[in-house]
Length: 284
Image 1 (cartoon, rainbow, N blue to C red):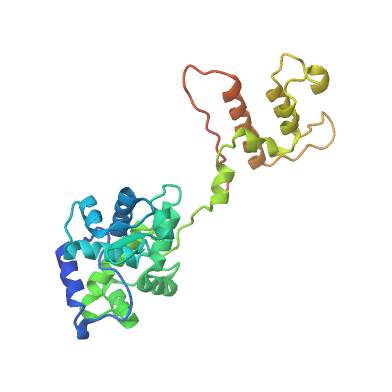
Image 2 (cartoon, rainbow, N blue to C red):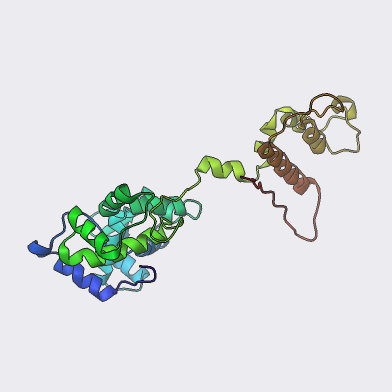
């Protein structure tokens, strides 16, 4: 249910009561949500980077004491696969934890953290792409999967909040769909290219930059044109005045324009301090 909140004290009590044999669940799940786990990961990173962080230091970083509430939070981060033990009284970030504290990778890391929880992974396998059942039906499903009867309410609340925080409800509230995340390769393709990378458009620009001290006799362009611009213009596809037109995909045009923007930034000053942004809009 959207907006439903977990009572922290009740979660601590529920976690304590689950130690009883008759109330013990047989499948892993957290009593708190994904955001709590991310909070712990950020505190570890702030205190110790990628190294080990003593629990007393982590508690101080989070402005808490070594209490049951603190251990419930660190346990939540462990279940989400964000932290792991590093000695007797120390924890450190896992690979997912290191990614979740990195802005460019946080979205994808949240997806992986959500699916690292055994209960959440099973629910996703059952309902992926579909709407979740009503509250009580979902709790019965969780009980079938191994959640202790007295814990289904807390498990369901943490699940729904975590699914929302990992963007699994982006396609509609209560509809469990894995969010699309761009790979590092896709992100790099959309980012403005540094001049050294952009020169690989077809090899000609790279050669011209290497020979930028030569005169117009070598380049074939008027001497008043900067060698960088001469090389850039040489990378334009041929556009015959007659005959069939030349195909030049939109994505390649955007790459050329980003390269041009990089070159202009190198050879021209701009007192206004403005920025050029080039984006691709699809009709589909």
